[in-house]
Image 1 (tube, chains in turn purple, brown):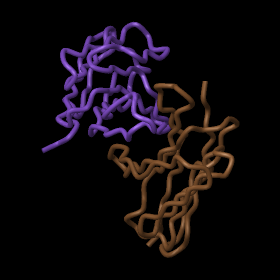
Image 2: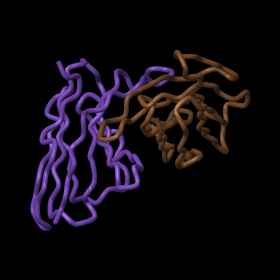
Image 3: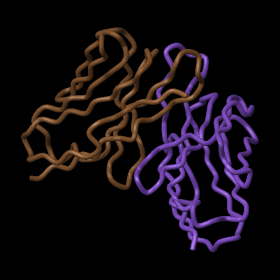
Image 4: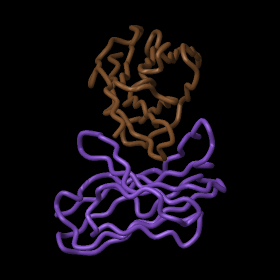
Length: 116
Length: 111
């Protein structure tokens, strides 16, 4: 019973292609996130959705488009892939954005994207 | 935006030695979280500190939040090979909805 799952685990593709990564959480959380972890292990938030509504949109190229069909799913579509997009992408969820203090985040296993 | 400095970037120890990683901020933090990422794995939540001067323990791990709520530390006593991984602190500031991660401290333990 994986709490936060992502597919695929590995993705190897060529420059210029379009690809999607899917994420699902079965924790009943309201908020979901996408993070990018580069080769230096730096973990940076890309997007956040709360109850299907986009609330955080960092300075990310518009080739990246998140979609949340319902609050249990947050997918990431990437157009025209570039070499610099190679990284590990983590999906995460947390219970309630308005909770004080902020609740912990639960991370998925990650998707290692390699662009050749 | 909120920045947090985490040091050291790398730490290599002999099994049985202690280990400490530090996170520092120039501004007052509302809370701080700590995560551990094993090699090839994903970040896993360890703990959250909220109160000024707070100290929490989890077995061999001791977490501290500074009196001024501008710094925090994670100390591991008598490291074991199972402690290897990268330890991240993560902070929010005020009403920010964003969790900002430190750059992490990668711990390796020589058996």
